[in-house]
Image (cartoon, rainbow, N blue to C red; front, side, top):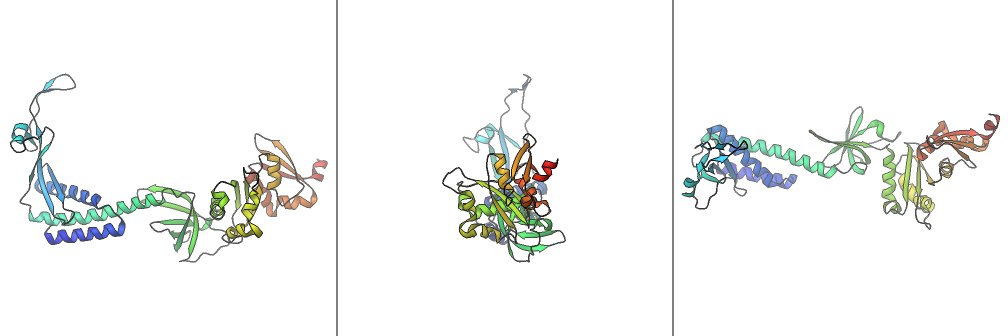
Length: 365
């Protein structure tokens, strides 16, 4: 590598360091290892090391020998062994001290290579290009892993960049995420180039890079939206016990507070629905029922079956989490909901299998 090539290399390296945030020393160290290896192959010399000047890009090559003695030693089997001396890679301690007074066994004596074959310059240039490309890929991969490695179960904001038959692809900055079309909110229309909030449902670190799976229909999306909008959820004043979601239609959330003077349901809804509406505006018409959690499963199930009222609840099997909800004719359809939606969400929210019975039917049985 001549002086002109060396300067061009350093200039290109500095530009990449600034653009990609790569550690310059990492690339320099890789360059030195590659140059030494290339020279070994070019000349057949066994012990070679290289140094690259970070300012000028100039390469210096050295052969080196390890300082040894021929003093016998005892091996693991208790046998006395006399070391074998290799004059190509080793130098005796007495001879080494003629060059460096205080050198010790195990250290090396370096000799700079003054005459470098002309063809080695071409090898050096090629190696430099290959190493830079590889290190850029490795550095970018590491930066992406650092940025997104802890983002699972979080909400990110990105830009819809493209789509295919099954997926949308979201530009998240240093990486792209995959948003399957069956993971969007049913009925919503997404436009390319628009900004979108997405929930990170899965992250995998692979040999080809990071894989980020996104969703807008996951129940965690509701949970994170609420936490972002309502300070009492973020600071722990109000606790979100559970979430049950039928994306695009209705969700139920159960909340409570350890503080007697705090109304957890009111804190979520806000004055005239101001807080909950900020979340609803991001859900394409989906509704949210805010339920008060109770440690007593009977009361919790009664609350969860809202808007149905006057519900009598009996725990049929506590171990298997089975409950019977008895309602009058007026509240039967409300408890069950359209296509059974209300009781299904209540079951998921409370983690009880809830069976709805009318009082009249129960008397007949």
